[in-house]
Length: 278
Image (cartoon, rainbow, N blue to C red; front, side, top):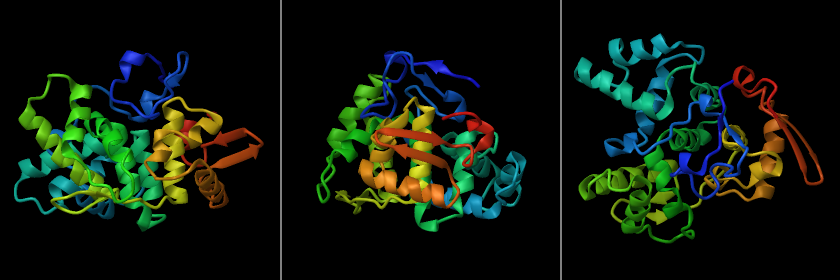
């Protein structure tokens, strides 16, 4: 089990409690998180339609090669050339893994067909975990009140803080446009020209995935109910706990709550990566 000791300098883009920023905490980067200052949103959005088409074309038990064959040979995305098919697969792989050996993708795939209404938020959470540029825009959206308009200059400011001078203003603007589109695909924003904040609806499946990601980034106990991964779901801690209890009822996780103590076991969600982890 590969773990990395937390260092404040190692997670420049993880703000508003997306990682347990405490010395001595261990981050499960082997689950498939991607850090740094580079991301797919320089050229693409979260690609929800493409992801949906690929997952519909390959059985849940499919191998990495099955996904490659579906995109490149089967052309399930209806791209005109082999080169564009391969490039699209590369971008999807950056965002989601598209490989059952990548734990985040494996759990996403496990949850995908359980509730179609959860799919956009499941995909967005995975993309957020794997694209530091998308992560850098989180505060500019989550800080908005329901009905407030997104200011793209605010989003660009947060991006600049995350990447420094690595991206020029033109590229930064493109990242902001792509990120705003992704936040729209996830349901957090509505509108084309003017992006208006809307609250999303959490489900047991999305809360289970949020807890999985939170554990991977060092949260423990009741901290898991206040992490950024829960905030992405526009979910209060008490509602998140109710949905976690429902996730237990439908067999996604094991959970015991006693007062302020929360004992969580995620082996039901993914025994391969979470065996023995609480």
